[in-house]
Length: 79
View 1 (cartoon, rainbow, N blue to C red):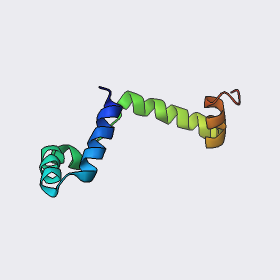
View 2 (cartoon, rainbow, N blue to C red):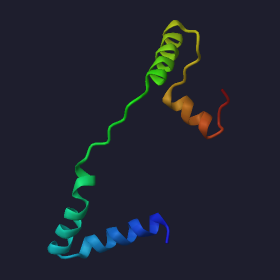
View 3 (cartoon, rainbow, N blue to C red):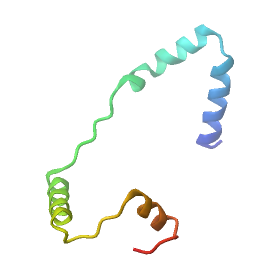
View 4 (cartoon, helix red, strand yellow):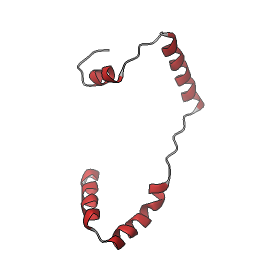
């Protein structure tokens, strides 16, 4: 069974499940639901971002708008 199928079955089940079952399932998953995912970058990654930002601000690198990036991804525009 694919993850997509499992998600669909769970959503369908939860839509009609009685409150006690929804409550039990929530309690089972509560810690995962409430934990905030922390995203951290290493010093090396931060240095790379800093250099790329400096290149962008000085005009040494090409930047794209959201629309241009979307067109490039779709193959409607070259970069």
